[in-house]
Length: 338
Length: 178
Image (cartoon, rainbow over all chains, first blue to last red; front, side, top):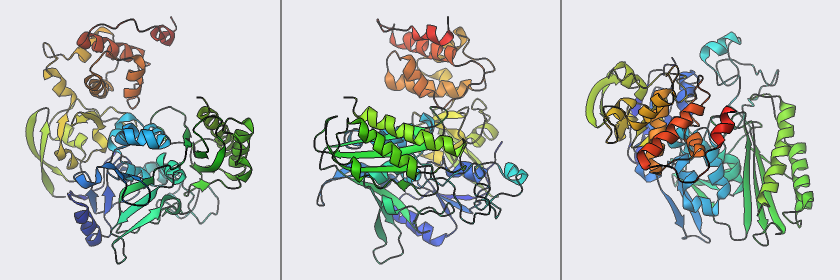
């Protein structure tokens, strides 16, 4: 039996009340679906005196199109569950790779609880961290991210390399999502952060979120040109598991067809270190048809060259590196299926 | 730590109880309300033995703070007995699990029943084996190998929603290798 540490629970009903509670309780933690933080608390990775629950905050539970700006955006409230995101008709129509990623998180039970805001802010994970306190003591007293001061993944390493393990994050970055934060310590009390700038290469503090901030929404600009996108995940089981390899792909095309010519592409890999990796040097893939075998060869080769998994999650790093290239190639081939 | 008062609705009844504020719904069900049908397995969201429904959605009681469960209608395996479709205190799913020998040690069964009940209610039709596999993907069973569980859920859906049409059912033969 895994007992939670003692804490008080606040049940605010509005975003303003959450922000006020965060301001007044600097050591409090936010709990949305609870599927990430509660196991971590049961493992004694933190012992906050107070949890601020978002369960009663109705204003976080919307998905809507916003045409007030230059283009139209799909705005997903941070409190939408992963089941709701994966099944929502607007998400499926405009952002199929996001619907797919949200639908691949853990299990149906966890998707019914976990939220898109929680998945975005999912804590980094490591095979030496996400264990019981007893297990970590047996290892000799934890590591940089728990109660110790060493790294078991990178010997003598001073920087935590726990892995960003969210399924949705690589997709959100690839689709140019913008994170809407409130409670920011600036004059406006809020800010918008591009998803590509939200993450840091530090497993102990892997986002730029300020302690007083709450993610209220994720804003996704609707595609203005034909686009085909994919998300590929490899894990041991087809359910429950976190990804061991993950990659999000986005191809902007001249026409929505397998023979469409690639005019832009974005490739983002997860589960490497704390920060998702944007794959670069893809220029020679531009101008090729989506169905051209050279395209999937070029992209998977660049992914393999630039992405170097660490021994921070199960399975050997060289094997995961190989699988990353394989899953990338298969995902591109699947995009040309019709 | 001081206990706080909880006002829950469980299996259609209003229930008030005091419990420490850091307790999960599972702890309150088992150690305050004597509803021990929901099982404490891994206690961290991997196994699904604690599955209950909140507002009709199957969720994990071990990862639900009891305080947040106050927002909705909680349904546990004990509540299946007096569902409208139950006869003689036995839900069609429970009856099918009995007839198909879908429970061996039985520890995972309450959670599986709650996930399966949500599937049947939402689909409101005879379900396919793939739909059952997907709906039960968060419930581990270390005894049965799942084949009989899937058989039982499909069978229960046929009992409740009428017989299957001409859809193929031959993947059960592949599953058992017979």
